[in-house]
Length: 305
Ligand code: XMP
Image (cartoon, rainbow, N blue to C red; front, side, top):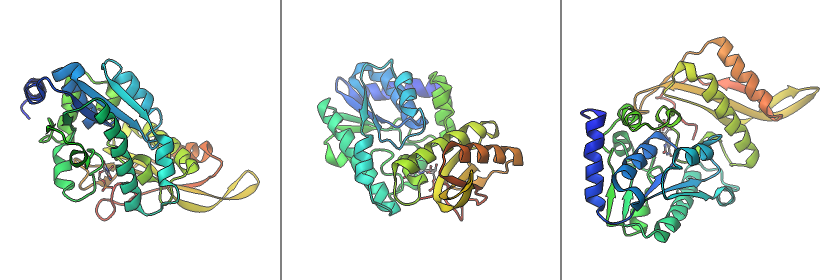
């Protein structure tokens, strides 16, 4: 990338030329990539762009409200409340790949409904360079609304950031004046908290995972991790008050990385670890213990599923 200002100017022109007088649609995930692509596309084509945010119920705490506030300036922001449908589809499913598949399918279905409604001719995507190399397989297919181009006959797909790395996307986001909460946001997987819950996704596990992820993001801000997360990884015995409980085990993970392909577990101080432990076990009656993951990638992945 040359410099953010020139990049922005060039891409605005490119998007405007590609889309012309037609309509385009973009899926907003709350992450920095899609948010930056949406802001660029909006600069280029204004109200010809419809931004679609699907609230899957698997999002981070407060994420839907943040999206609503940040993109309120856009003429056509669609927020689709789909959490009930996602939970219903996921009920009883424990296989990680099946869970991803269900979420990807449902996501496409929700997105497709809006894209048809607004008669979208173009699809704008926030694909970045590492997505293209890592997702030759299936790993991130849903993140970039994979599958949509086959199901809806778009005239074209626009990927303004396809050659950028994450840190360059952040530079562009800052130059576009996107709020810090977005431009500095950690990466978050497309399937959301579902890949931070081992086994079946239930309302209770979601509640635990959502609050624990919020605690981790807050407590580890000063460490500036590339990514930090909490996952509900199983059950174990604990003592709460006078009772023994068979409660949830929450794993905390914090890593340094450039592009997520390899990562190093971060060294944290004891006080920080204990503060997270105390807040996470205190937040829900059924959390029995908190563990810290010291594994690098490889051999572990960053997410738990
Ligand atoms: P892993 O867990 O494979 O993750 O080490 C590498 C990076 O990719 C993110 N990730 C995903 N992103 N859809 C996504 O959009 C997915 O299914 C998915 N799985 C992992 C992960 O959060 C990390 O940043």
